[in-house]
Amino acid sequence: MIDLILSSLPLIGRGLLATLTVSVCVLTLGTIIGLGGGLSLLYGARPLRLAARLYTDTLRGIPHLVLIFAIFYGFPALGLRLSAMLAGIVALSLFCGAHVAEIVRGAVDSIPRGQTDAAMGIGLTFRQRLRHVIFPQAVARILPAWVNTAVEIVKSSSLVSLVSVVDLTMAVQQIVGRTREALLFYAVAAALYFAINFSLSLAGRRLERHFSHG
Image (cartoon, rainbow, N blue to C red):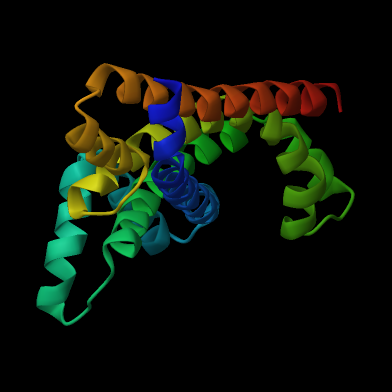
């Protein structure tokens, strides 16, 4: 059994690297999109708020897999050819961004109005209010929901295997097809996914305590 796992480590390693690459790219892009979307929902001009609301409500209502297929198969019809991995990253980033936008909106909106009024009273600009007053307080409120979203994204990254990306799930499927040891290798995959998400949860809790005390 150990020999079987060791002989399969190169393929598992490549699949794990693909999963981590997709997850990191999606969380980075999704967080950037979400920050912009959340601030647009709160402070944008009316057309921008309406566009942000349409984006968040629409994307949160579409299943991950449908969105991946729509981009992977739909973009070529528009003359835009994306690799399978890039299509998966774009789709999941858009989905992640919609969720992060609502997280940011709720966290920033929960900051007492008096904090903003006091910052305006001492002459801080809008950017200074965000940087020095609002965001330092909002981060501790954003982190728990963001970590939950990050965990879901890591698990959802397995869906890119359905457009032929050799991620951890696809790698394990290929190994199972060759060895017929389904229970063993799916247990290995489950342990690796758990390790990633448990590490995310631990890091999130530590950061939350740090910013709460800060």
